[in-house]
Image (cartoon, rainbow, N blue to C red; front, side, top):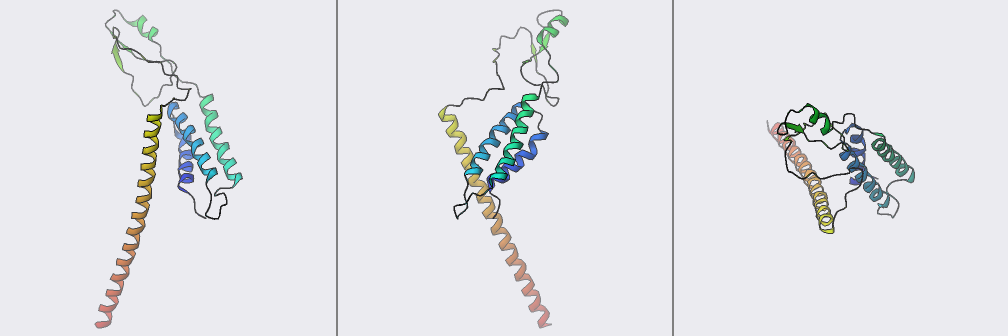
Length: 184
């Protein structure tokens, strides 16, 4: 019995999750992992048996919850407020750092410098809440996922065909060499 595409994706995402520092991506990982685990637990073999044992499903569930608990326990290391910059500024037109104190900072990302008198509207984004999508957005995501799965399946078929043809050509070359050797 082989490993399904869903299980491979779940394993890869589980192995990548501990290295992910971006909390919003980590939350997306957990949501995707839970979705994949649900799909995996529903998969059946051609004989009608579960593809994955309950023990394995429980093991995956525990790993996913460990990643989820890491999100809950993770606190931003550095928070910079606009008030700190306001104290240092001498006039209102000096640049300041745009910051949302509720979102975690990442050492790989740069802060955007904006003028203090900027009239841009700031949007509050609470990253701990899941994003609600309308039906059109969800349908678009589902279409893209299906397209990605179809492309993956097609790539597997093409890789198999390439391997078969490569082996046939290799066999043909060997046969030709044998014929040349026998005629000499």
